[in-house]
Image (tube, rainbow, N blue to C red; front, top):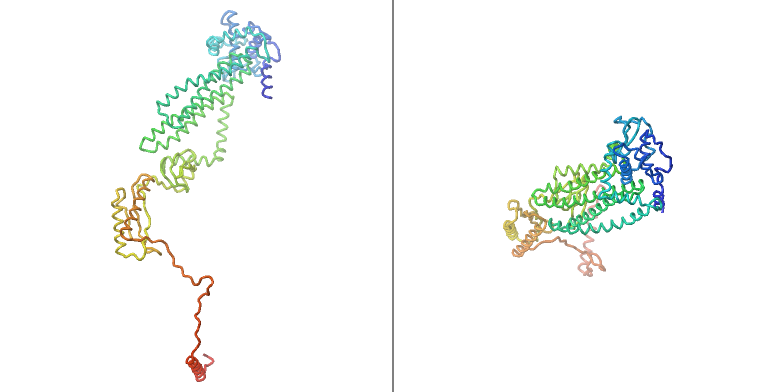
Length: 547
């Protein structure tokens, strides 16, 4: 609601001449020259002959009137808003840099439009007046200026500051742009599809980038058409300024998005070309170059956008340089990761496609970026590890192995005869040496130790395979061969075992004592005699106190 009210207020109010004070017609300063030209071309104070007096004479009066009107249309069509309060009113005004008697109200947008002092009178310069037809033709091509003049001369009724034909144009413009979008899209789609077939764009990422490029290109064309159509409507200059600034910024944004999609397509083919080479250095460079190109493109597009927003780039760069130290201190981890990525690139502890173990993570390196390294684990999960952690941690590059190791212990039961074990070991050695892809010089198969529950044979055989899948295939062949040889030799594999001794079971006494049979008469006599002998021995051999 507030936005609608603000728009209606802007359309109904012209801030340039709300005060209604006429110029002095003296042309004694830049302010008087520019103000007189604009004042006498307003609907309420229309006097083109007086407006033409602010221009340097290059022809007859009719020519000068035409040039004055065209200059006003150029200012309105381009949205060049003149802030009267900022115009110098000093007749002796001089440029602070060139010290010349020239003043340009639009030094950034159009420096060709300027007023100059001659014999104490300020007027639009001869260069500006001569350039008016070319600027007008560029802004209103294909004879559109005649249409604009016809609408301007036949405009009768107005509503909220706009004539009827201007309201009709504002309503028809979105409809025409919508129809034009689909027309451009259907014209470009067959071309994009034929290009995709010609360059064999078969992956999903490339096809998506092509569709996005087609979309952004169509939108960019619409924005350019809108920029060309807005001046035809001859809207109030401040409204034109805001609308054209917004459309120009949008145009640069679409160019940036289109450029990013084109970069994606370019680097898809660069990556495919890098994959065909034997070295992996170019594979590692591709993502870094891609991100560098994207950053450079974004910075390149931001410069004109900031200029359209009237941002002081010199002050901005100075502020960034001053705040660079604070940013570097606050982003130590980011800087550390950037340096670590450079160290990874030059030191090359691993490359894209290597199978590594780093930071407790095991997987295949899929991308080495500015900040982190992306790894694909066995379950196809993607894990990003900061490059600083990769540099500081121990890295085991399993992808650079010359061979893979099949290594384990074979346990044999203790009751196996020694000769039988020796024949089994000899068979294992023959099997390992007979395999076509084992390293014959590094095979170690020996009786290793007497373990607690088995006689252990160390089986250590290196195999020359390119990947983990082939390693599993060879490992399976060797293990199956061990099982067959053990079966043929009558060898039994041992397994960890323990002996358990139970003193008693629940419900039974521990260490039960057998019942004592009753003593016989002979045993009773024997016990009595033993007692008597002990008493006699104690009487005849008394024990001394020292004992």
